Image 1 (cartoon, rainbow, N blue to C red):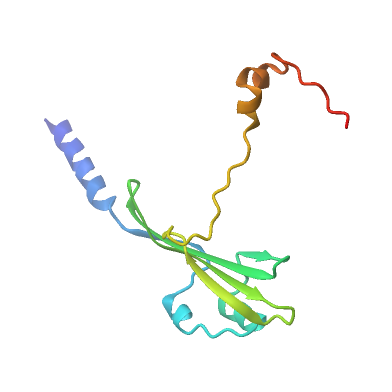
Image 2: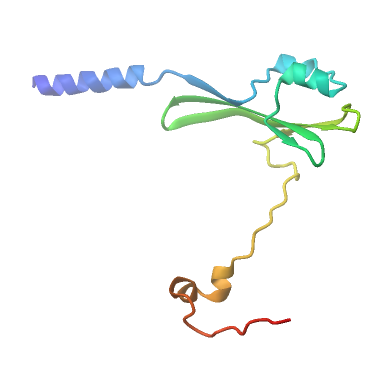
Length: 143
């Protein structure tokens, strides 16, 4: 009977103390105060305000900042509170010309293109791919 009490006490303690809430941040920690006072004119102000960007597009001269906040109580209760991507476009003189904030949890913004790459395994056949050359041979193209 004592073993059953011990098991019940252990599971009760794990249940009680296993439910502590944990907050995890990914990317840059950008607070709402940072966003309300957003008056950035050039690259110097941008780097002073947000620091080094998560990604820099050198071709289009854009700076990307990613931020995400997760709260979890245990392994089966995870909640993403917010997930944003901030994009700042700079001109040749390093002045901010455009800024966009994208809510990554809201898929209603049609900024992403859903393209799929061509699957050659289905065209060639799975057996040909696995065994290498079984089946009809294709003539080499010499043009």
